[in-house]
Image (tube, rainbow, N blue to C red; front, side, top):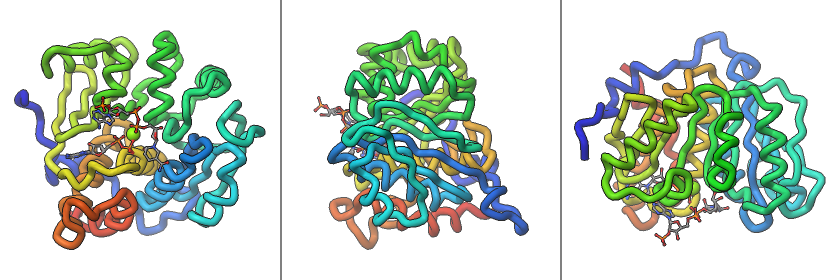
Length: 282
Ligand SMILES: NC(=O)C1=CN([C@@H]2O[C@H](COP(=O)(O)OP(=O)(O)OC[C@H]3O[C@@H](n4cnc5c(N)ncnc54)[C@H](OP(=O)(O)O)[C@@H]3O)[C@@H](O)[C@H]2O)[C@@H](O)CC1
Ligand SMILES: Nc1ncnc2c1ncn2[C@@H]1O[C@H](COP(=O)(O)OP(=O)(O)O)[C@@H](O)[C@H]1O
Ligand SMILES: [Mg+2]
């Protein structure tokens, strides 16, 4: 591993913005989570709940109709807008006043969803966190990177990153290719792994929290929700990514005494966020 800036408690504290005493849900920002398809609505439930439990004031989920009862039952605090189509997203229409949007989890890569993403990116100006299938669709339409707002946060795991930038022979080559895209489009990359790296132009940060308990379905969906929740609270995108990655991993460090590495699931990250936030005090 190169000599990267280590994301520890001191660094995370420097980039963290506590909630003010006289905050109200309107001042804590409104986030939109866009994703889901038949059989993968859970990824949006996880992401939306993580977004709320990261302090966002309001969270709305934009999902296909099949997920309506599921998410309203699973996460009653989250408001819902449904696509016209039953099983996957075919257009993204909303007239909400938003501070952050997280998208891609469980979205699938149907042709109609490609079109929906293209039209959405052409009209969107809200800060974005892009994950999972939205990344996979971007990989098939690389020219759409031009449409992203400045300082958009991308959160690929290694396979999603390979689809986006092509294969690499070394970590140095991977980082060089990522920095090229980061500089060209003003993009923040959260390269999820063990450990996770955050690359933004010339800067490379390495997370110091997390463990193999996180190798479980939905843990990346939860991270997208956490980063989107911090972004909705007016953190700068880089700060939201850095603090989100730090807290996400910290929940695993703090939980394994009880769960072990095997019995820690993505919902446990959400459950552990309170304790992780409490640790983030001087
Ligand atoms: N409850 C729900 O609704 C859930 C919904 N989910 C949703 O499912 C969608 C697909 O997400 P996904 O990451 O599973 O699929 P995809 O990108 O095709 O990767 C598959 C292949 O890529 C590799 N690979 C995977 N991870 C890697 C890693 N960390 N590091 C390195 N390599 C890695 C590995 O390939 P292999 O190594 O086997 O060649 C694997 O076979 C997405 O929208 C997500 O949000 C999930 O979040 C789960 C819970
Ligand atoms: N062995 C590990 N050590 C530390 N973090 C891990 C490990 N395995 C997975 N993770 C973390 O878990 C998350 C996995 O994300 P992802 O593959 O997108 O999950 P999903 O798509 O199922 O939600 C990433 O944040 C990654 O850094
Ligand atoms: Mg993922």
